[in-house]
Length: 311
Image (cartoon, rainbow, N blue to C red; front, top):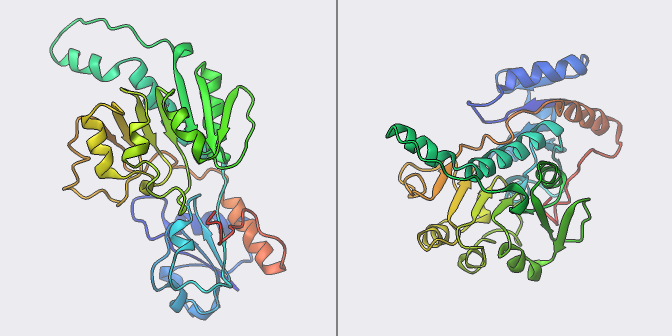
């Protein structure tokens, strides 16, 4: 029984670093990377960011795919992954904190007119502009799971009026919670900023189409750190041109890396960050180690994904 670390990323935490961290808490475990793979028949657990197309055929005895993050749509939809292979995701505190901070940073950037003042500085121009008053500002948080709830609580603690939306009923102190598809347009029309932190499912893919974007408050800001396919990007560009919403901040896009010829790069109403909002894993690798132990012993896994629901 062996664990293979194969993130497939060159610009994040290296596979060797992850393997060393896991080996420190699992000193007797057989932990490998692509460079130390050996016999692929030994691999029963795979830790990835995104699965490669040939992983299931290369690893015939695979029992568990551990996502090193939250979004599992590309693993759930992998055409070659056998039905008996289980999937688990992470619910770590560090990236949830980081994503909540990312939302807060770009909301405050808009509230304090930072882009305006930075532009004025280049002209040596002293141009006071009143910040937007936080208690008068309504922020919507779409998705009230581990990360969304953390975001909603942080925004409420800063002093914003916070509204939350989810597929099923949720309750968060200080947050006006709504649920169900029919409630979403009414919520969007009240929000000055909308924070999307939804998973990718058949129900959420393309959720922000022309009709849903038109339901937003004129001049509002849409921030997406959920999944890139939540937004119809062509519809978004048209909506931004019409001023509804007034700005979009995107940490995720439908294709990553975002192609250089994408109009999103050059649109004045779009700010792009390269999927960096939830960078740090913190102590989440302890859950990976625990799932390796549980897979070995037959115990229930941490954060196992319902493959039918997609999360």
